[in-house]
Length: 136
Image (cartoon, rainbow, N blue to C red):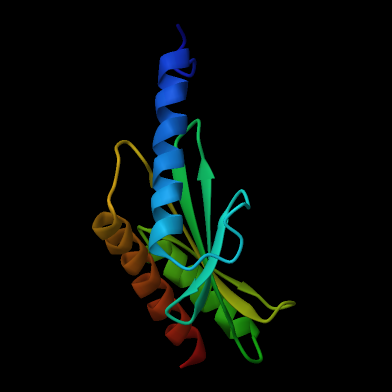
């Protein structure tokens, strides 16, 4: 077996893990469209999208917030933040006038609501720092 090949048992385990975590999030948060492939909501003044990759399994947090009058200096600040960021990436979409923070988390085991919100709040804390570095 190659290292990238997975047994059906492992594929099923990862799929079930992702499904359980997604369902827990839907129970714990107010979700706009619980039938969507990703989870869409807002949290601490950010638009939040949580996507899942069953096979890996990954949980991806995308946080966005409008930003007035983006400028070239902000792109340099995002690049600087990315060089020092461990958790995720900072981006600026000047056409949509928004700041975006993205973090990916590997899922190896079940997590409960407390652990999920710990992970989410750390992501939001990083996004808040990044956002306010841009608008300061």
